[in-house]
Length: 174
Image (tube, rainbow, N blue to C red; front, side, top):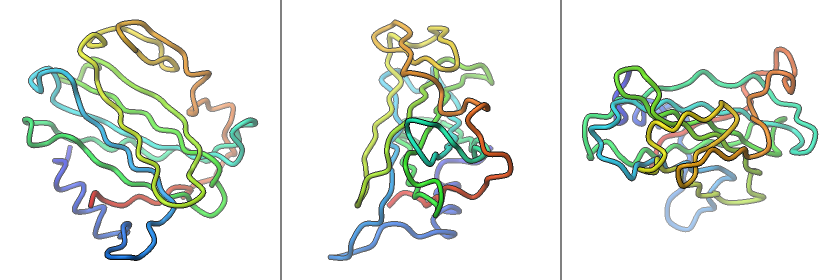
């Protein structure tokens, strides 16, 4: 497990994302992950992404491997992760966030969103207090203490094109 700051620095060194002073912001998704619970109720967050060619028909690449972030206190949140579409899977992006305590999942959130036509799309993903330890299925999210399906998981293996990789470029937080 890496600390959030080490992961962000490593990622930022590989692919710079946001331009400065007057330059256009690349087409991207900015996932901001936080909590509405005491930080002591989680100690790790894992995040993974997947991308697709057509929102209606599926056609996804292979998902990237989950990245883990250790959470030691309020200073480690929020996590900010920027991703950009690769050349072929540029219609939508899916994400999965898991909040853990001592290796056990206490909540998760899965979502799918179209890549913006330009600029950055800001997507906040929060762990709500009334969703702590609510056992939802892998393709459902907890909202106000109840499990709600967003319409299928973007990580469904039946949607994948075998061998399709490198469909998401990731960069660090600004």
